[in-house]
Image (cartoon, rainbow, N blue to C red; front, side, top):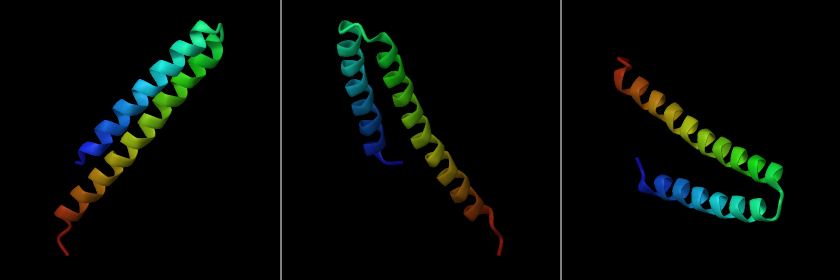
Length: 65
């Protein structure tokens, strides 16, 4: 596993937290919630891709022929 993925997730989280704060202060709560939801979906997609790669690696290890 690469450490850059952890940095990407942390960076995205910090960026979304700052933007959420700005949007909340501007009175745009709905857009702030949508931004947070979009951030969660992006991170979940990254993690799903990693899990898929893990399954492919495990399958290649246990393939007999």
